Length: 203
Image 1 (cartoon, one colour):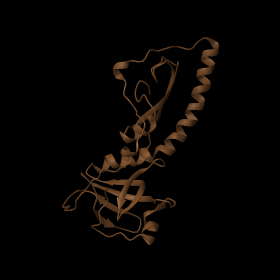
Image 2: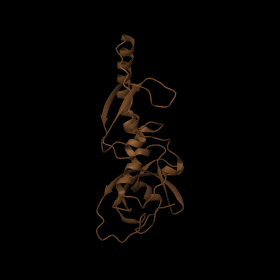
Image 3: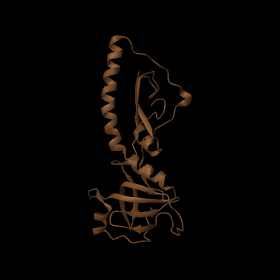
Image 4: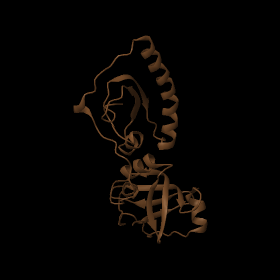
């Protein structure tokens, strides 16, 4: 909701930052991006299962109703114009390629939110055995007890999960996409790409 997340990628940054709520704003256009007086706003809860794709779809449905409401208010002459508080403004810059690269020294929760914010596109990426892969679905395991693994190292492998050490906790990988291939669950991926405990992700 404006004045938060002014810029090109508000949905992505709300997810990357782990927000639990987002929303939509309609506003009058001004020369400076996303700074015009607000006409209507509507809030939307962010689900733990949401990623950029699912949240965008839900916001699109909400946005169509909000747009109709805004047009009706303008046509009737009842539209308000609430000035934004620039002191509360935050930015949502365009996602660059460098921003998609996973830094395994960061906490698992932050990496999980990065994956959510970049799925299905452009996707969070990493390197394993010289191959670049996109990480498309993850979960978080905060248990760090007794871990002697380095960030990026695989700590456990199960049929449908690969556990990777991070700077704090473990990131559980569920779905990936190898360059030039379709997205698949991690079990199917390992049928054609061997992974072992101790193998290390990283660029």
